[in-house]
Image (cartoon, rainbow over all chains, first blue to last red; front, side, top):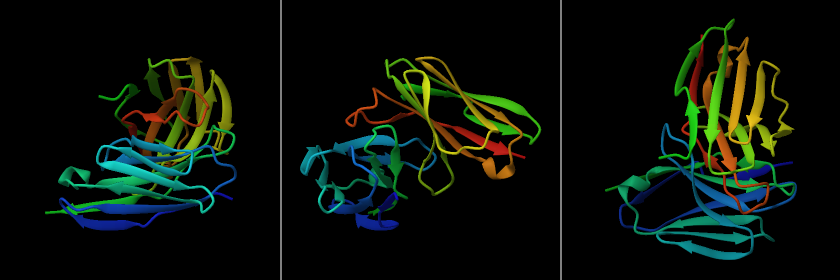
Length: 110
Length: 114
């Protein structure tokens, strides 16, 4: 079966660092994506991991451990505009299906 | 600005109506998708087209009928919907079926069935 778990909500302070975790169990694996979604808007692509290790892109970094079925998204120097839902998504072995986790709602406070 | 364009942005329809949602992309992507998203829930996959052929139908009721007239266009025809079908319908595209290409989403059509 397919299962992707993320915390429901997190709160962090402006300027701080926050780590959003994701664990997954899927039938096959062809990459893990992180998307950001502001309320009422479409998801936008943040990062992609298919090999173990850390991918860094500006203030955002994403880590993957395939053996543990685990990923995290690290956001540095938090800004108020980072308040959004962060969706962990896994593309299955066949390559067509991208399955989304329930998302983590991040609240950034001043 | 999104590179995937969806129309209309909002749609209110009765249970006996027939309507269509439209999606267009000009990025040369060969895979296109329909997702359904309820409030505070993740997007749920409905259909996948690859090279203009239907590749995946996630057991979606027949009152939803997808169509891919060409590589740039994707439609979703709606007929005899139920109030529980009210949701945000997201179209997405990706370069191809390979793992690295992310989904590019349109801004969605917010559908209300009365």
